Length: 424
Length: 189
Image 1 (tube, chains in turn orange, blue):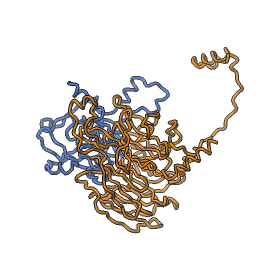
Image 2: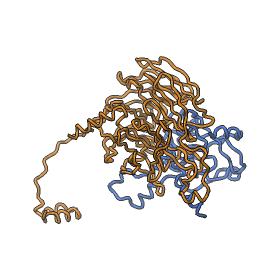
Image 3: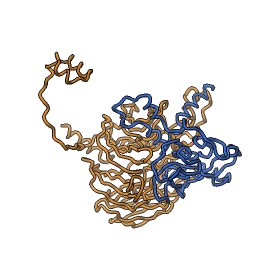
Image 4: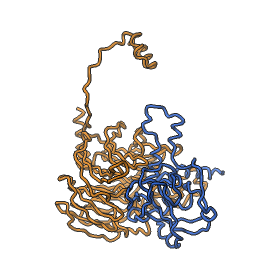
């Protein structure tokens, strides 16, 4: 212990050489030579590991970063190209990143492709080229999906003609394209199909055969009226039931487990009769009195085991009722999907724009938020049950637009076991 | 300014542009990356500010009497549904692309009210394409914007379609004509 003052002084002065001679007691055995050329791999995932999309301004290129929300450790990342999408294999062993890039910086031939990464070393395991120039470049999350057998990946195209590209991940090849006039984005449906949102408020469902070829298609009746209220397309699912949040604060559950979509009755997230705040109320509540509405980018999330729906909400006093559907919110409201009642309000430190929730029994909520005064953006972790702010990941990148937990509801338990085994 | 105005002004100002796609990206994109090893000096803080065009010298339209406002400002009337960098800050104008970039032929349209005559105009929001993003004068307003299943009224879409190069540079707002009152109503869900 007698060396401590000397060591402290050395560190504070950062004069290691001089210190070594001045405090000979510091002398230690020399370090052994280290191996060159090592790369680390990633161990069994923890319950709170999550991917997030880090997005770059100007180039619109992204990367998917793997982080541990318990420690905010940065674990790994993969390059993801322009306006990418991410799909995670149900067993978590592979991820599929759909990307766009160009031959010469932003010029030359355009390549649209799917890259397969294994989730141990995060190295590319192969690449599948898609037809050039068709993939939809937009901020929406639902632009690709795995079919239930997880052998086929379906990619949504927009040129502005709409179509689907079907990819066989097992054979690592593009199978076919299907024109999908007037219908957009993809939600996995039935045994081996996808449903798409159409302009009249209906769903068009496409079913594929065992080889990934189009087998059948059908059009539902409209389940909402887009002339009256719009649905946010970044919906969240519990099992095969998707919860679409509407601009005006209703939620439309759609069961896509069968061959045909089954529409459940919409229910309200907000009190539609709530009166606007008067000036006095607004003054005393910082504008939080009066009606609230949902808004944000990845604005909805779910917890399957708890049967909960999480939605980012803001007071319309703040938004002045303009562009509410994209407006970030200071709170996340949590609903029990059985009772259709709000059960909690999670108050963020500022506002949040994108959220997700891990599927384990002590879930955390990861959020892309911003400080109201400084407008500095940040990646935050909250306790999804107590709502308590837990920690912030610093230097996460530029914009964490999307979060996808590594653990899926179906395999959360096995992941817990694997982590414990690893710890023993 | 009375206390009510001050609160609402603060709150509204803080949120004015913090919304989808490029709005979020702008805010976040201006964070300094890789600055871990150096303290954030005042100059770095300044550089980290949002490129919202507040310090950009203003300009006017060719016809300020009938087309009033500053085309380099997000609150210019015809930007009521825009989402992106304003080309007027990037070497172009409110209705023309910067040199060397090409206007995408397909896009989405909105309707905005011109304060000079109180009429609603149909505005075509075209993206200019062919280089990296301009990263100036970010503006994201979502009034009357609709989801992707109504693409003609959606601004999440990267509209550099039908151009030889699909990289996004900035956005323009071109007046197409006057709108029928019903158009404005129908497009406002």
